[in-house]
Length: 316
Length: 316
Image 1: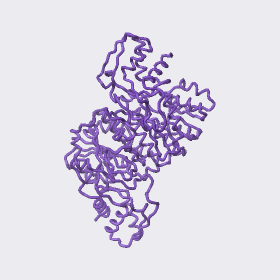
Image 2: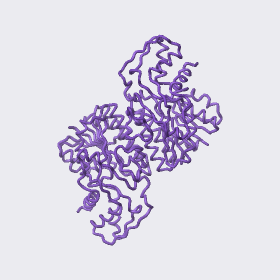
Image 3: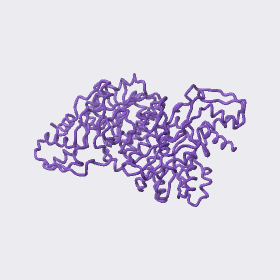
Image 4: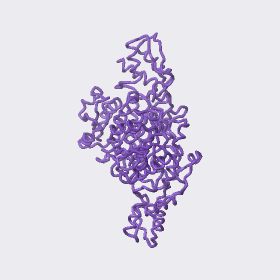
């Protein structure tokens, strides 16, 4: 099967591509290299079934050309802004890199009659709903970040395009995903800070912001596990919350990093109030019943995913 | 108060502007005249408190200039594609005229620190949910038209922008709105067909597609009624289903038109299966408890709204 991975040079996309190639698929990657890079594709580039198209998914002519050349049967859409803190200062980034990439991919699928679509959505579509166990049927989705808004808008597009053109789509709402090829976020900030000052660590918020972290290998396994099952789906769009049952606080992340860096006398300095940065959802709980009933569960718990990521980042 | 009405030369916008001017507001209108026209603004143009800015809301520089000149305190967003059948053939229309107009208006509000926003959303955000009484808490919004998708994406943007910038927004999900200045849709199609052949009428679908039709004057009254109440809202976004408790079938619309045109022997020819055109939701039921409890109800029932619109279109 011929597969196109949009955003394939990024964190999750590049991990997915390695596994797809291992499974014997023909994989093309389209990426503008704004957040992705060819280092992430080092393994893939050596594979005869892999082709890289460097360019902008927002450029309709370029993208149509990629579809024309590759004639994909399945499109995986992992191209998006992934730095929510950055786009909080400039919502244009989400309009362009998150929403418009979805629109352009779906439009090309419509034109070239590609019928299978995978979309990397996010827990950020739910907004801030303290005390509610978020499942796929939770009503009143009210994103509080431009990122969450662009992803929810993308989900709406997927619904309409799938219905209008007889697509079948698989949508995963991820929590925080971590692992090899990750390049930003709290783990990296803390490592960088501790490398420059091994005795003090400034922590934004009160350290109790607690989130589930999923290890990227688990996520990729879930994608591969469900990608073919959509053939049997009765609905145009199949939606899953994907995640882990456990969660890790920001303070716990700091503790794990200190343990792995063998730093014993670090003083934590908490700043900026309880909530962390604006647009961030400080704490949420995911209901994973649907995906568990469908036969998938993560191998690594949240703390373990953090520890593996820290060790990978430190090269240990 | 200084008000900017985006899409003010269109059907609903022009009706709203007339009432806002009557109430003593300073009103600026921005419209690209793609669906709107200056005829709709004939009354407004004579008013000293009215200014028209003709141009494209997707042109960021033009729009910023309008904000700079008018310094609005309240933005009413009624600019959108309103011809769902047309955009079914070309989703770009919704990307540009429905979603991107919302993004650009919200971005300008962010830049110019405008804090109050009204948005004309739609029942199409719910998708096709036969047997479910649609209320504001209905989960799993799955639009089946590009129009519904672009409106749902716009609602997501409004949620994030409002949270991030301390806006207060009022969002109405309209059903079909009809009345003076309307220029397309089933009522006009039937009148046109019957004017050219008073003995035969082709009806798409089985004639049982049944929808609530709200008269535009009722809708405008609801907007004015709630526009100031958002000051007291606890949430960034206040959302209402707006509509009427009754509904009118396509066949009943044909009957009313024949009555008003005094045609007695018209043969109806039903074509195209039960559902009408693809992307259309053939039948839906709205729960209006929330808006009724808040003290508003429509004056005209659905059949009466249809009849008044027919009489206006026929000039009787």
